[in-house]
Image (cartoon, rainbow, N blue to C red; front, side, top):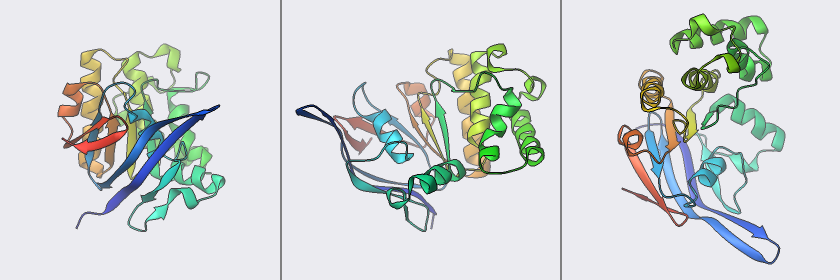
Length: 228
């Protein structure tokens, strides 16, 4: 039987503004297993990015539960400090905007999650160099983000996302700022990581070509999700 990575149960997210309430996520439930590769599609405002933030522990649901791993760790039962540590050690994030630290080199950006976790610079640099080599940037390790192309920056972000050998990568419109060729390359890279390391992938996209390369597609409409 496949190993459970993530279980969402009856997730709701309501944003409150003065005297009004705006429900964005409305009772979402689904499971992700090891090696899953899933796309979430839907129109703007459907709640896709909000859902991704909930699943990654970046935002708290109004109600519902998120469990992680076969031990069924309930993310929202963790303290803020433990949740931050848990995210760093178990989840990888890739966004449309790469959020690389501009003052650091590609190597230093990839090392950052390990340094936050308390690893030595020596140990972190070895792993980061391996990952940058894997994504084809061995010759760019000393370059800062401004010296890299958009596709190269996103490959650095992918390398950073797997620095801690996560069980799950959450990606939000990761090809949105790339041309079609660079978009294809970063999806190729992500799928290779999925196949070789068994990392589960959950990505939000508007691109039907990207979604078509995933093993499963979930459609989100009006805050609810259904299998398509």
